[in-house]
Length: 65
Ligand SMILES: [Cu+2]
Image (cartoon, rainbow, N blue to C red; front, side):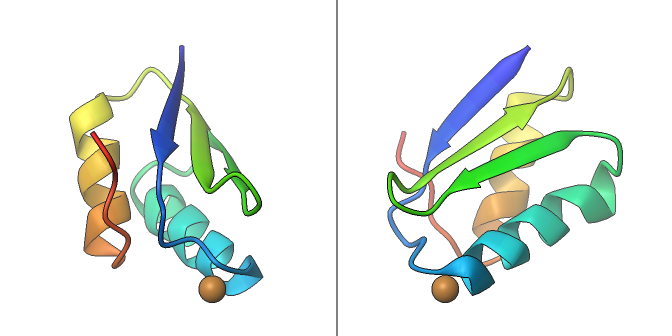
């Protein structure tokens, strides 16, 4: 299952790393793709969508609904 989140606060590779690390800390096996240009985070995961959304927001990046 692939989940895509729209995250307007993504501006650079540092943001991408912060988000990727925040997710992988909790779910080391998931694949995380951050598209800096399109400001999206794509997660290949069977994990709960709301939990991953919360991790992105806890890292400091609000997610658009
Ligand atoms: Cu950044």
